[in-house]
Image 1 (cartoon, rainbow, N blue to C red):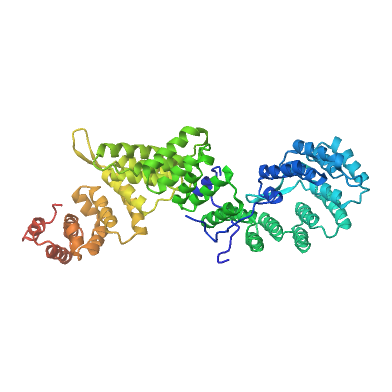
Image 2: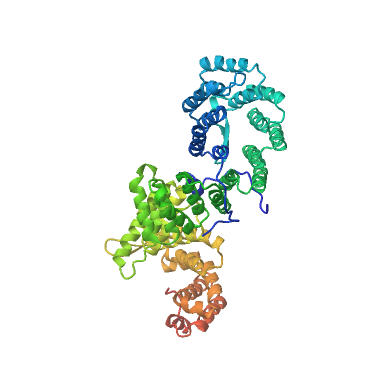
Length: 584
């Protein structure tokens, strides 16, 4: 593997929220002429209904001890012991005297239901009938005490956890091994029992023995992979799943486990690739599988593929409202806002109990993405709906700073109180402001620093200017070469006071100097900031005239200002003999 799979705990993020969902060709080599899975493989895939259908058909067409037992066993593995008992009881009259196979199956149906009043005497009876010497009977009882470990979707768990008794399982299975040392199925079950006994090393040894005795290596390698997965050794899990595929490219469960493992560690492109291969090999068309396939492609940012998968399986998926969410989110990411709005709205209507904040986030972004050329009023309505939906999502999103998006909108719309409020909310929710947030916060407060009283008279809000300077100072640290930040630090410190006070306290001086040094020598910048540069020169001329009393410095700034702006009337007037530069 070129990249190792790290067994780290995924961070809480939008991705974590995505995982809460119910839950154009293939990536990798296409596999042609895939044979239909047998019943055992179907059960390993968790496709119990298909397995039962196959086993029941065989039992009906060729009734026998084994066929009836297999049909009951299918129901047993599917978690339906009562239905299993029906088939076992049909087979009991066919059992051999010393091999009460179906009678054992019937006894096990009581065991897995934890009905020990019936289970204990019935199990004792079949052991007695077989003289405790029949490997098949001992094996079936021992396997039952494992609770039937079943791998799938990233776990390996017993179907019947209440019946699990690792010690009893090991005892019965070892006795079975004594009677039949070359039975690979017994070794596989022993591996399960030792795993449940928290002895993973011995479990893997038993699994390896199953391979040596001729068991399908793909199935065993997958089981070993599952054990390593549960022990959080994900690299060895991947290695064994890939061994399973190398042994048999049509062994579907390994593809499924690889897809789920890569999903777990947020490597969504690999997850999408393997689930594609799983579906191709297994022909699994269950709704939950196809939905998960679309999910994985969405998470891998292959939004068009996610949409295509839903569209091509519309008949199967139509009854699940989650498809509208996946399509809506995908269309929002594909910059197709109308389709996004249509699908997300449909989801909100059909499944209000499943609404999550990200639904409003994607809906909000979709409304904001509508262009509406030539219709400012319609654009304003859609933007308003967009912000309304983002505001619903913002308090619940712990990783994406939606308040920043809201502030950006209000800032561009020149709604500065709302922009400041949004960024204040971001801070309250623990988001660290980036340089753009800091700049917008500073500029909005700077703008709000110019207030008017009831008569329209200008009032300087010194608190706002101070807040502007503080935010811009942080922005300047993050991006020291951005001239507007320096300029507005100077202006915030200048306009917070009367012109004479601003010159005398000198707070704006370092920023006006820095701004001149950053822009005055560049023609394009000089033309862009002409008025601001003139203000900066006038300030520095006045400062050296009134505060430092440094005539040389005063004349140097005047000379430099005139060299750049020879036609400026204010600078020309200051340069006239006997004229002071106090008028800012």
